[in-house]
Amino acid sequence: MKNIKLISLFLCLSLLVLSLAGCGDGDPDVVEPEENGELTTNDPLPGNHEHDEFCDHFIDFDAAINYFPPDTIMLKADELTITWAELYVFLFGMVSNLVHVYGPDLDWSEEFDIGTTLSDAVLEYAMEEALSFMTLSYGINSIGLTISDEDLKEFNEELGNLVEEYGGREAFEQILRDSGGFYSLDTFEQLFKIEFTIGFLINELYGEDASSYPDEKVSEYASQNGYMMAMHILRQKTEDDETALNEINDILDLLDAHRDSADLIDVFTELMFEFSEDPGGLVSYPNGYLFQHKDMVEAFSDACAALEIGQMSGIVESEYGYHIILRIPIDYDSTPISFSYEGIYRTLRQHVAFIDFDILQQEWRNALNLVLTPEFISIDLAVIFKVL
Image (cartoon, rainbow, N blue to C red; front, side, top):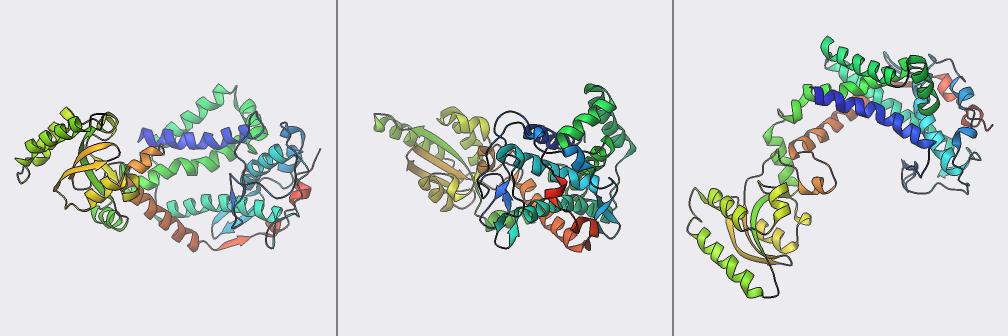
């Protein structure tokens, strides 16, 4: 379980790092509107704002964090609450980012989308982030998940090491406050203990690495989304095309003797490692490619789609050369090539389990009887985030 704890702690620190980056050098990702009015990190905000790189000189964040008492309840859903100290973390990240890029002259009444002001959009973003934590808290409570004393001890030790690294509690709290909008170390710990628990929650539902997520559901998803899995032997085209073609024909002759044999996959694998000129594929995908039609060149995908599982093709020509393709059963614990191309090393089983987890989180969210308190409704960002 240690790997999950470390990942969760990394997520804890990632928000702090992003907050630090908001007032640092370089161009941070800017949270901005999509066409549908949602906040993203790519498109420009409306209006003309000048960039200034010292955002900590613009806004009186110290006054902002103290605008309400830290334990003032801003959102509640049954027994769950979000305090001002917690909500402020999300507001701080958004506002400091906007000010860093556009300067202090933000017009909070400026139209962000039809019928929505910039102030409305920022508050909605902060509320959605807070709701995510409430939703996870609800889910943790609903399935009765508890974290062992040993795991909590390790979490506290990691947190203690972090505090020590930054020069003690008082120094670390000041860093958290100035650079992350955390009212105190307790706020930091309270928020991210929930995030720390996500790994345990997913393991409880689906097993470690989604190992207990059922094959039938992964199979259904793979079928609906056109996933295929195949091994191939490639001989690359050269200036003398006849050489590569002759070579692939010789390999096919060797395989034809086993085409209808039970040992076809073993023989194919042996010849693939001996003769295939696809070194990257052999290293990264030694058990075959897991892909959708769009992920491969058309000739390869079409030829694979025409095969039954366990069938071998003849010679297939593509822009890369000459292939012999063996379609194999999908290994649900393999990583689709489209994921690995994007630097995501998540197996197909994990991917489908996380889709289910997203659906479950939406069900949990729908079960929340959310109430905005009068204090939340009274928030005036133009007043709270004053320009110095």
